[in-house]
Length: 274
Image (tube, rainbow, N blue to C red; front, side, top):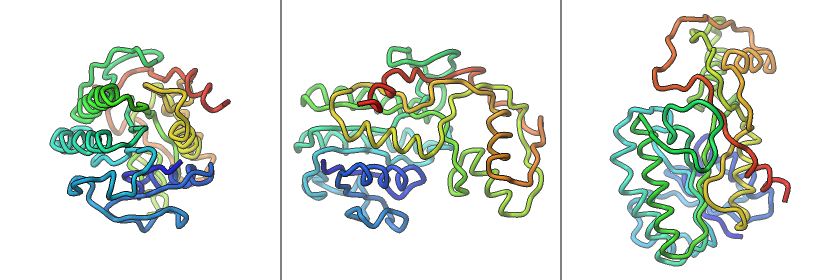
């Protein structure tokens, strides 16, 4: 397959592009900058929202994997709402021009406050602009794909564990703090339980989903099990042999975070075993 990957130069994009290429697919990788993208990809620097006919511009790809999204870790940023019509118009244009498969990166924050296992039928009540924006784009993308009889895949991402300092997760921030020579890291009590998935596993799951058409709809990109934040962070520090200690209780928990939430991994397990 020839897959167009938007947002390909980002923290997730660069790993996902590599995994797609490793699986034998061709990649057209686009972003504002392309300096961190695998050299095997056809790299095109662009502003997606300024292209009149993106399907033609990017060489008529078989599939779109839409990762592009600004301020993904700034949950109350106004950009999540301001950019929403632009994402919709881009996806709609691709669908109307001839692309046969559309996969988009979603987030478990679409669900809102919830406790327990999330599957594709779990009701969504997002509580932040980030969650609201993603949830709205999911519904719009599903509508467009249904109208055009296009393969629709919504990849609902969970909590990614990686030791790159360029991400915005607590793990990336700890890595950056270690590189700055810090020996203490301010932290919450860490008692909330989340679905953590290692960066490489996350990239591999997304690549496999985008490279097949049989399984469609909402697909959790997850490990399928909950773990206390404190336990996973302590294990992360040990795994990377970091000389840093957590300052428990320095920050309060975010009021909109669930006490225990994880993804139902039955669908992704089925896809990975194909």
